[in-house]
Amino acid sequence: PKPSEYYLPYHIVNILILSVATGLSMKFNKSRIDGLALAAIFSDTGIEEVKDIVIKPRKLTEEEKCWVEAHVSKSLKFAERVLPLNDNVKEAIQMHHERVNGKGYPRGLKQDAIAPYAKIIGLIDTYEAMTHKRNYLEELGAHKAIRLLISSLRDAFDTHVLRVFINKMSLYPIGSLVALDSNEIARVVSAHPGSPLRPIVQIIRDTAGNSLEDGAIIDLSIQGFPAIQDSF
Image (cartoon, rainbow, N blue to C red; front, side, top):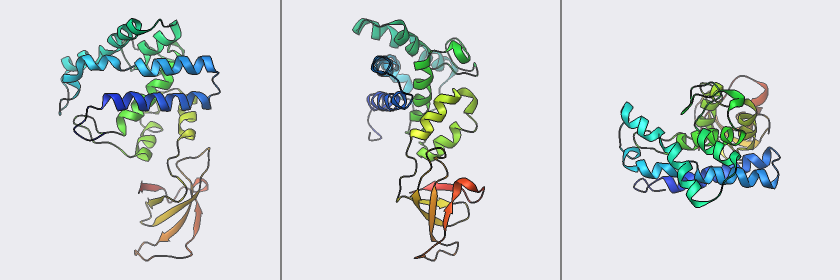
């Protein structure tokens, strides 16, 4: 969306697409995919009722945060007015801001107390929020968002769901350019499904900025240095 556009419709569509893709990677059957998709569509619809707060270009006050967090119950009420929903879908809408470390809301649930669909939608909702500009926060690139998810935010999400989601993402498509922390520029020549942050690359520009026609090929998955710092 353009900076001036209201983000929620795009956010909902993106959560739907990524949730279904993750569910398919987890071998969900059609019934489970349908339930996951319904929960994804309705999970954040309640934000519309607190739109004026959400779009404020500053950090929210504690009172405003409480109003925004109330969107969970508003989303469920809206969904129930539109369609008859089974318990799995209702629980997913109610719990998609819960976190496995107990630091989510509205109930502070942990681990298996959180519905399976909610674990997927909660992770993707977080990723989506980080990779797009939201009020006073700048967006992150996909690779930086993933690095946060597997480092400082790792204990907030289900390990299996996080692994499936990361392996599904094409963070560094073959042919894309990346900047290494060795101050070299490289082209991605192959990817590892089990190690999406550390593909095989070929150096095309050395530390002095000289272009290379036959630069070294490096498998970043089998060595600690260099690592990808940014992508283009």
